[in-house]
Length: 72
Image (cartoon, rainbow, N blue to C red):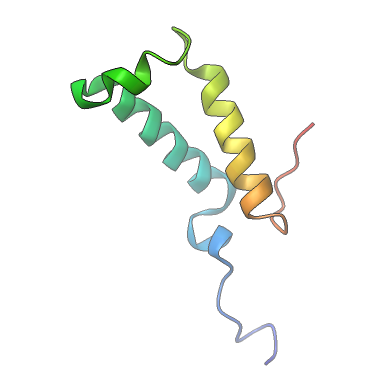
């Protein structure tokens, strides 16, 4: 199978780094707004910025190690 006809990688199907980030942000936005997630929300700091960044790095780096995402 040549690379021109290969199916896109799952990471690319998600929209690459920007798509993964959008999914993470949508998750935390929903958790922050919906009462059903109040228990889980209470486990986090007042600011969700750190949690967003950690989950984004985990998904982009650990689940898609061949992605072009690089994190320091």
